[in-house]
Image (cartoon, rainbow, N blue to C red; front, side, top):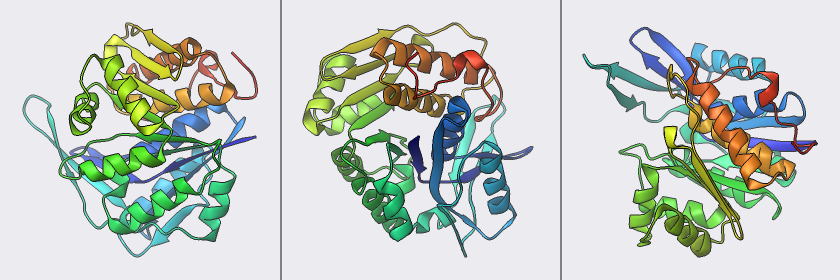
Length: 298
């Protein structure tokens, strides 16, 4: 059975009407587990506080079939993002600092988990503190050479560091980004040209096996060393887009583990992301036709 691990922040998005469970690694792990339906062992390496939000987070992950044994409980508060909506519905975000997930520790249990990992997904926000940056990079570096080391870029000012992005690219072998993040990476790496040319440039510079670009309603591009899949989006009535990118990454990860061709991987990931956009919330169950079993080719 394949083993997939999400690493980084666990937090609650606190809206005026109450908190909602989230965080990119948590969304990724939940979506991976729901899409694979017991055909993959999914876990998450993160931390929560010894508080109500922490206990609720662990319970929420467990109900989605995610192994929570790598979650640390420490004496810092569970992460939260306070979200305010203006009169037009536009949100502003304030990330609580010095949260539980800022204090990750890499120990023997994490080293053993890394050694058995087939795919690991990590981001940049989760590395905003020295402690968690050290732990996350140590975990990723301890995975086998065959492991998919997926960097899902998440630019969240003021927690953006060009040096951190470059270091993360150096230890990754798969990159996933969106059409807002691509120009930023092109700029800091001084790579010009079309979207595919920038993606090729990043793949060549950092020896990436795959690069994926999501473009919202315009679809997505996934390229490898010798192939590229450029597919249009799927028309859908959008309820909200929260978690759609994380679901795309989950579906892409399972598709790559299955060994499907890039068009199949891309098409399935777009379908999954579109389904998430059609529903409220970041994590959910998926209908049977969207299930991806890495033990079987689609």
